[in-house]
Structure formats: structure tokens, C-alpha cells
Image 1 (tube, one colour):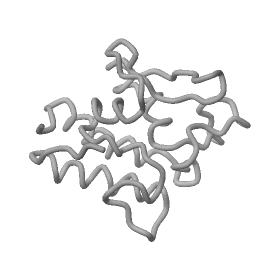
Image 2 (cartoon, rainbow, N blue to C red):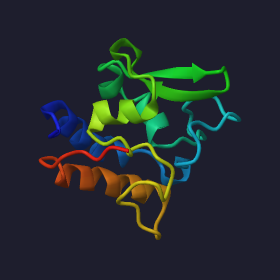
Image 3 (spheres, rainbow, N blue to C red):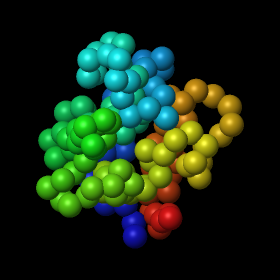
Length: 135
């Protein structure tokens, strides 16, 4: 399936707002650092964690969902998307977008986690007319 107009818009918007997230605040293996209040200047999150507080995505129904009261993950519960892979697919047309470093098909070995997400977004835009990959 091709990416929808909304998915392409979300990817283009993400390229802009992702650059405002400090590189030191990105860890693709951590939904949110539990030692800091949610989304402060010291918060460490993966891409999915940051998506849960972006106004453009929140307006589309993205919210933080507590799983077993221990971790916060992005959800689109009104659409019935309970897994993070389905949230990533709905928002960006790429089920792997929130994966840990090294598990996305476009990840490179070098560079920061922040750079890896930027690369994923750019590659998803490049693939916008191609079929999405499924697991």
C-alpha cells in the first residue's frame, strides 16, 4: 500500500520538529527515562516517545499509554491501534519506525540514535510511493 497524504505530511513535519529534539535526549532503546518528569529538558525518549507529545500528532489522536503502569508508549486507542508497530504504520506508513537501533531496515552502524531517526524519516519519504514493509 502506498503512503497516504497524511502519512507523507507527518513525515515532512517530523523532519522539522525532530531537529528541535536535542541529540542527547534520544535513546532508541528507551520509551521514556523514568527518572525525569515527562518531557522536560532532561527527558530521554525514543522517537515514539517524542511523537506522543508533538502537537501535530496529538491532534491526530496520539497519546501516551501506560502499559502495566511501568512504561509509556504512543498509542492511537481511538483507532484500535494498540501495538507501537501499528501506531508507526498509521502515522508514517512504516511499521519499523519506532524500532530499537539496528532493527530498522535502513539503519546504519555509525552515527547517533538521533541521526538514525532522521535517516529513517528521509528514507520513508523516499519510499512514499512504494509498498510498506511488513513483519
